[in-house]
Image 1 (tube, rainbow, N blue to C red):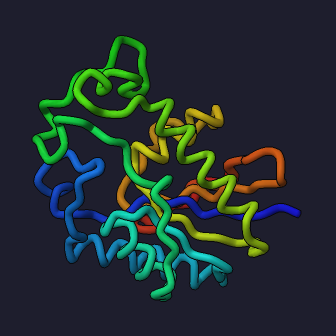
Image 2 (cartoon, rainbow, N blue to C red):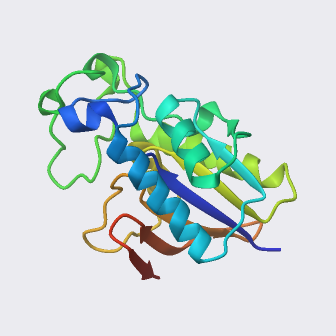
Image 3 (cartoon, rainbow, N blue to C red):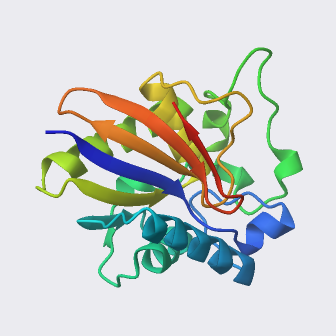
Length: 199
C-alpha cells in the first residue's frame, strides 16, 4: 500500500535572519517563522490532510515547527532527520562557507576537512531514517519536519529531480509517495506563497 510522506523544512529562525550557518547548532523560530508554520498548517487543513504520525529532527526549530503545523504535542524526534553538520562553520556567517566546486550542486565533501559531514552521508542518513520510519508503523500519512541541506541530501540520494528554480525555503514541503520499494516526489509546495507544483 502507498504511504504519503510530507517532508518539510522548518520555519524561519533567528540565525536565518542573521545569515548565520545553523547545522547541528540551533536557534529559535522567529515570529515570522511561526506565521510560516501556521501557513503550512492552514494548507494541510484546506486539503483535509490528517497525519497518522508526526516526526521531526531533534532540533528545536524543527520540533516547534512540527507542533505548530500538526497541532499535536506528541512529536516523535529522530536524530536521523537532523541537519547537516557544518563543522567549524557552525553559527558563523554564511559567507565564510566554502564555495561549491564548478558544476556541483552541493557542498559534496568540502566540509569534511573542517569537521563537517559529506552530503552523501547526510542523504543516506535521512533516507534510511525515513524508510525505517514508514516501515515501523501502519499509518499511511506522516509529517516529517527536517532541514534544507538534509532534505537536499535525501533528494540527491534518491536521484529525485526538483523543478527548475525550486529551493527549500522555510516551510517548503515535498509530498512523497512510498510503495514499499520506491520513493517518488509527487508535489512541491510553498505554503507561504500558496504555490503548489504537481510533478
